[in-house]
Image 1: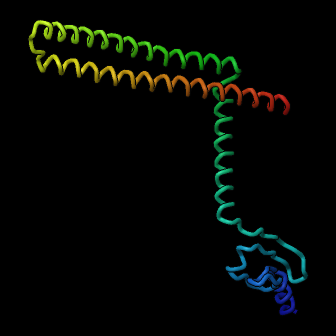
Image 2: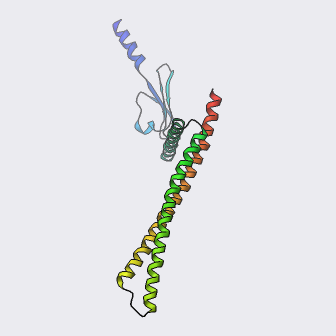
Image 3: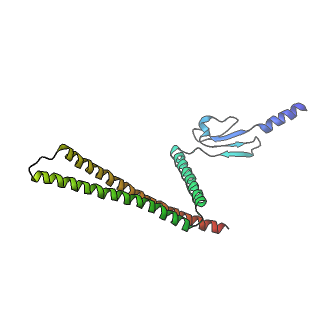
Length: 193
């Protein structure tokens, strides 16, 4: 009696694997070869009842596409959560946008002031050098170096202004996207309530 009970329990714990072999034929076996696992399989009981169905592994390209999709969804969720935590209305975002753009514009204005100063310095030094040349006097190397230094600084400041202008455009674009997404989220939340 005990042997039959143990035998019945062992039989109940036993599972079979149904899968396609390398030639596409259905195989029913108590072991699952590694080569068949990637093609998908079913786990069944000896009485034929299906316990679980395992889908085939995705091809590498599809796995990569799925991974990217999941990363994008996670990034979208983080962005949505961030927007909902930081702002309570579109007006809040517009105010933040105005402040951020104002800060950048102040920096641009300061740089433009510096640029005007440097250009004035170059004009002054070039005027002095021209005056020396009109009097048939040689322009010293120090004066030439000073003019070159000012011109180099002008180029640097112009680069910084261009960087700040790009930053301003990117900031405006980012806030506009935030406003658009926040509006979508508010509508979605409103529908759920």
